[in-house]
Length: 259
Image 1 (cartoon, one colour):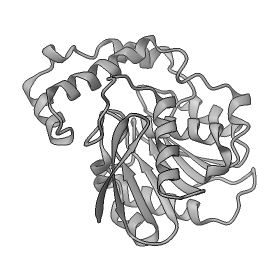
Image 2 (spheres, rainbow, N blue to C red):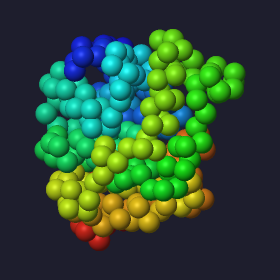
Image 3 (cartoon, one colour):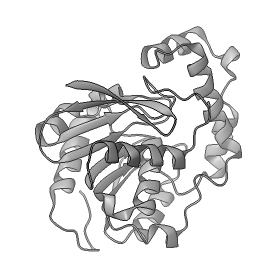
Image 4 (cartoon, rainbow, N blue to C red):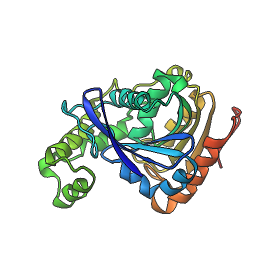
């Protein structure tokens, strides 16, 4: 494993590289960091790919002087990282925020993503997600154990952590950043596996079906009993095996489906 920092788009973006082979971009979820993939099958991905794990702006070891975050801007950051690494085209896996970033990347520059797995991503924020975002406590109201857990992932100080919580709460009033229509997603050329838990409290499984129907070369995997991000710990092995099998397929007919 090697650690790196790239100066791009006004930030210092941290990323890790593991393994050899074709490039695979792994994008973590909101308030997470690159290290989260250790609990979602990282070792199996590394055996098959050259795995690139960035920290999104303001997350982990990546800076964010402006303290503002959008999925669209993070997508521009990731495209700039690929440019920096001289990678014209790659596969990718994104979880929640990471999946949202991939939707932006795959619609902005479709030729850059050959295949992708989007886990618990969304076309837009539904009312039930906004209701949960409204309940996120302000930084000063967060319990001590929440601060300690965040400090393990985000080493740049408490101001960084406060900015992440404030951003997460602010999504309740965000209507532009994630606002994809079926027509928008119809321009995606990457083979896409949409992964949803059927008990996701943020995004109803119908949204996963909507994305599956909108993206031309897509498959849908609904995880029984799965919540938001149903890919960690005991689910990691199945997730990694299913994702790798999908990413390595040569093509996918419209009738294709992951089992």
